[in-house]
Image (cartoon, rainbow, N blue to C red; front, side, top):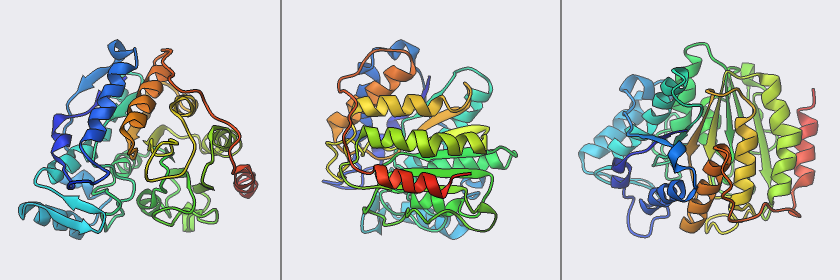
Length: 331
């Protein structure tokens, strides 16, 4: 597994007490070390995205606005999102990680890739930074792939709906966007009837789960919604927005997953496409211990290890929602 990460991500400092803090990345690094399969990890520093690649997703005004705020030394982007002097460099690195991972996978140097990056990206729309996100990392990689004529599936398991990613590909039939998220919760998007528009109709799939939804509900969503949708779409590439904030200990959400559930779900996801065609992007996850254990369990499972500090869960609510979504997308 290629791990793309960089010390420069620590220089993005949104402010004292902010949930999206540098310690999050250090918790992920600790998870890599704790996984028991560290010898299977090839770690490389990250190359920043070019202006051209970023502008495949984001408007020139949005790009120039962030660059100008950087020249001023940073500042508030929205009530939840701030830039520090190191944030713009970190954001450009995060935006470039997926492009770099794709290149390594094409060369078959590794079988899969994990972009351990920050700031996260899936809330950033083409014209707006929000929800701790400056640039939409997963969307930038997907847009680069579709420009090559590739079909891309994005599966988002962050507890918060990826409104930015949905917006980017709302009317695009070359990208399948599937999200399992808590409902209701910030940003308030991702309803069942949000399914895309124009030629993109039916290529957006949302599974809005109630608080306390646990592993059995997620596994049902995979069996009845996600796996069938991805198999019908038959993508060339699978990009995973891996938010670990659906963990039951996360302070910003109310879902019921454990690190054992994450190991199971991520293993199921990467099996949906051949080797050399899947990559993981770090999104949310705000309890440091949960982030470490979820990373460790996930990486261990993907590389054939046995590290599983928590059992998978069951007996959570939300099966009726899964069945409703499955019926909507029934062939």
